[in-house]
Length: 264
Length: 318
Image (cartoon, rainbow over all chains, first blue to last red; front, side, top):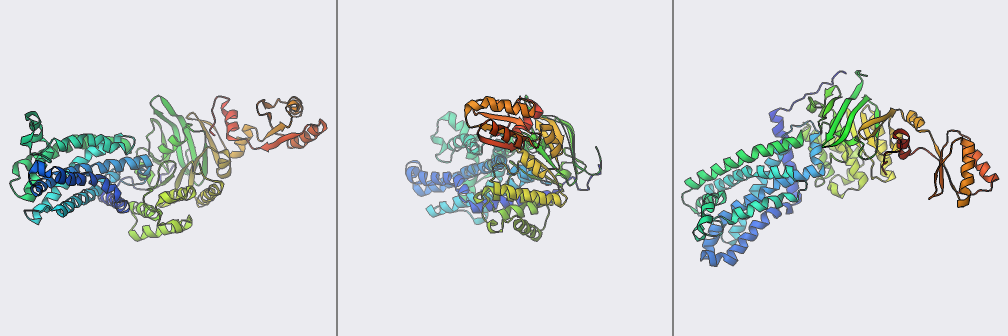
């Protein structure tokens, strides 16, 4: 039969435009159901209030000093929680059949994933800003300058974009969207508690210190404290970036393999 | 069979899921602008075939061409020719009907204003204008099916797949969907429709292909298929159970074959190929003084199509 003349490829520019259209969809959905953002933001905010008022005096001696140290750490935790979103969103699309609708359209294979990642940037930014604003209501103050604070937010968003591949991977593997947070929180909570976020690491037993000192949450918390409260950031930033690159090196190929298996 | 007017062509499609063979070598050919009804029970392989033809699944063997493009090698080209509505290929329930339509238009390279205009036209055509700005999750079943259909039509597809488009709809909504399908076919769109209902295939399709256990077990025009199945059936249920035996004898005498008899329900079923059978039977029953609770001429049901075509082993769908 004579083939009907239609193009059989999607240009990179079109792919990005399609990704933006689909990111727009994600943002529209956040606007309609802001509670989906609260889900991932609430936990760190609860931690902020709980630890500041319940344990702040006992652990830090002084509540204000404690808050000033806690908030930069909780920003790392917020980013970890916010990274759950992409896996949940993709898994929901697959289970509801929305993904198959996209797959039946003449768009790039990567467009739905790209859209989810673009949308994720917005999710990270909103979660982090909510956290920061909430902290400021409780008395947190940026000690450095606005530029450092913005750089810090950008670093956290970059951190989130490195983490999101683990979330994508889980979202592609599990059957139900509700299983995504469950599977990942099992890693997030030990990572954040076995760190310098809540307590000074010197108070921990030696074997645990060995872990907390190389824990990426510890390293990035140090960077955040440096950028928001002042102080050197060179060494923790370097090792933090090593972790981020390592994370991408491990989870990006696995996530892409799982994704390709779902879309091809 | 390979001619320029064939919109959908499948040859020897095989798909296995683990040990289960969903499709065991299926051939299909749909001429451009025609409606093919794919009939079969749950698990017959209908959805698997549609998913392969819509580029959502790769066949393990065989090939399929849509508009002359291979569904595996030229998947993007195929996707720009097709529209898909089914149990899967859903719309985003959190967005409104309009937002879904505009988003698809934008994905299909329409400008913002073109996408909006297209959405408006489709909402109007599908009588969804009043609900256009409500979340799809608030839609009724019939509205939901219409927005699904509208979404698959944004890009003016040449080939439309409808996977069980009326399953679960009330008769009124079903008639609406049927009217839409007829209108589309009238405008030259090639339609592949899967259904569990013979009546639906009969109403809409130019040709019917019957699937069973991943194989095509019958293929033909609706009237050919029904002839094959044996046309109409006659059902009789005598009021008194003791009359069952005599009614059975009368039917055997009139038709020359013994009717199928269900002793539990007291129902006798027999093929009714002779147009005067019904009136003769009424007279005979009257003479014998037998009254009946139920006496009906029916078109064959899907169950009977299946029994006739596949023998007794298939468990037909409800």
